[in-house]
Length: 326
Image (cartoon, rainbow, N blue to C red):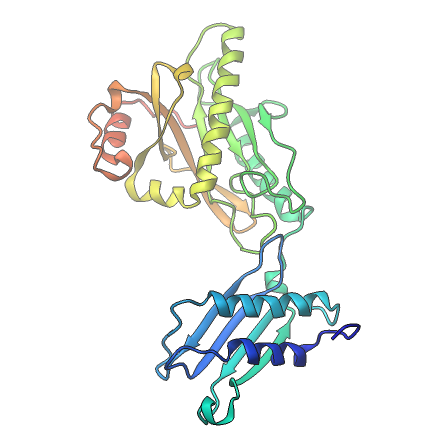
């Protein structure tokens, strides 16, 4: 094959040899694979019996063979494609008689629906604009960000899996003169580097700055709780479906707080008291969650056997005045 382009006929030949060692009972096989998309390639499928049930207990060998063929086709520089479908059918005669490892068909296609978002996709700034409109309707946004990460990888991903990982600061109209709210700005930015039509992890999180005295005290509190909120966003991004968990339980004990947050020891996540949602994002709306720091005494009745400490979290919130909206 040296000096000759690798084409579909070559892939079918190689896969006939590789996929022929099918497990007992297999009558067909089908695999769907994508080429490398933002550093990630995917293969699914396997051998099936006459009833259509998967029979291969160790599919890795077949995945490796399909992946190798896809890589060689992609490297050959032929017509553009990003998806490959492989079909294997058993011979009608026993292998021991003909020595043939079944029939294989390979098809390539370009599917625009799986093209990953690039680092300059307009969906990112559309999401940021929607969040800014939401907060501007609720108070005065202070200029800039109290924290932001501007270093994303070549696909536009930060630890929040999109290009935005930052914290806004707001003085709500409903708050006292020194009331400040910190809010994540980026958890609901659509995924970078993949095509899924989702607003990131489908939420943003706000935190009422705990009380203090004097401008210097406020500046230090902003610094401390900004770092806490960035870390909280990292955990939420890693957990992915946290908003669903909060909706299911009403409130959860989400994480412990470092010693410098004393007297607060744990962080509760709950829905915004007024049920606020952020509208106008590229793929619909997302709920606004509130992060509520609580002392150890407030959740002393936490049941270690209960998922997420939901009962203790809800009880602690019931003792709080949450009448002012974020």
